Image (tube, rainbow, N blue to C red; front, side):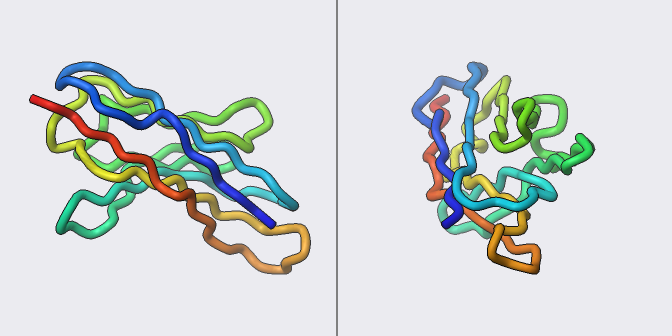
Length: 121
């Protein structure tokens, strides 16, 4: 069974930084890419950063230049470094992985449980 476990959320003042982590575990054959989404109250879940297995990254315009996505050397843990946080960054942040489980023949999306990030003004 594949699991994604997030950590690092919390309450922070505007202008400060936070670092989110998401570790994968279980019977994973291959990870194609990992990313971070967020969902603010009353809004749809949006993709904010994604990193592919070859290291290519993509960011939403709203976080470009402030947030940075990376993985560990084993490429099974993804990080989101969030700098210069703003109140509008307040949301639940979800980790996502596009991967093929050992017992599967297809690529599937897996999600973490979500971690709350609150930025006070």
